[in-house]
Image (cartoon, rainbow, N blue to C red; front, side, top):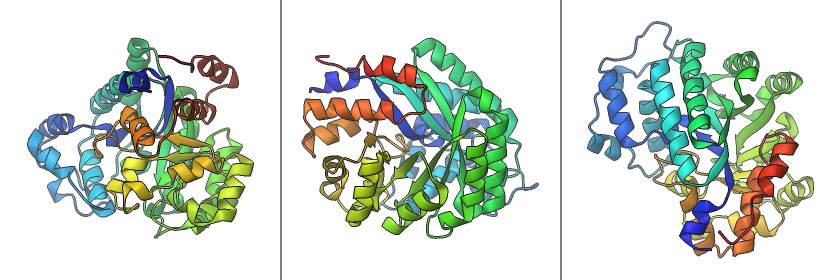
Length: 347
C-alpha cells in the first residue's frame, strides 16, 4: 500500500489528546493572546511563573524537542497554560479536525483535559463550550465525527477524578462518550479509582484508561480487574506477560497503540523493539494512534507507514488495522457497519 493509499484508507483515531494536537505555530499564537501569568486564585499549580511567557514559533518548536516523559509533561503543561478561553478551545479543536481529515480519519475520540482545567481553578464548562463550537464546525466542514473523552489525572487523586466524571455525565448530550485517566502511573494505582469508574459506567459512560505505559504489565492487570475499561491506552508492557496477552486476545480487549509516542517519551527504548507486531500476531485488537501528534512530530498516516515499513504489515493487515480502529470505537453498531463497508481497496 503506497503512502497516498494509506491517507485515503478510512480510519478512526481513538487515542488523541486535544492539547497534544497544538502545533508550534498555534502555541505561539496562543501565547501572544495571553502574555500574562495565570491567576493564582484557586490554582493548585505552584510553578506558574512562566505561564505568561510569549513563544516565537521557533521557541515553541524547541519546547517540543525532548527525550523523556518528564520533558514531554513540561511541554504539555505549557500548552494547557495557554488554553484559557472558549475561543482558544474552538481554535485548536477546529485545527485538529482539519489535520485529522487530511489523514483519512472519518471518526475520532479525543481526550480533553478537564482535570487539568479544574486543578488550575478554572470552570470547565465555558471552555468546553468553545471546544464544542469547534467540533460542530469541523464536523460540518470535514464530514467526520468526533466524540469527547473527559480526561482525569490520576496523581491529582480520587476526588478530582470524581469531579471529572460528574462533568462528563453533565455533558453526555454534547458528544461526550466516556472518560479516561492519565498522568503518572507510578504515583496512583488503578484500585483507588474503582468506585469512580463504576459510577461513570452506571451513568452510561464508556471507559478507557492509560495503563502499562510507564509501568509493567501489573498496571494493565490492575486496570482490567479494578476499572473494567472498554479499551486500554498504550498497553506497551503487556507483551512482558504472556498470560496477559492471551487474556486480552481471548476477551478481544483493544489496545490503543501509540508507537512514536512510546519512543519519544523513552517508554520504549528503540523503534524495532516496539511490541505492536507481536501483539497483533497474538490476536490482540490493535488500534494505531498518535497520542500527542504535534508534540511527537507525527500523524496517523505516519503511524501506518511505520507499521508498513518497520513492522512489515501487509496491505491486508493495514486494512485490518483500519477496521479494528472502527470496531473499537464507541460509535453505534449501525454506524460502525456503514464505515467498515468503506474499508476496501484499491484506493
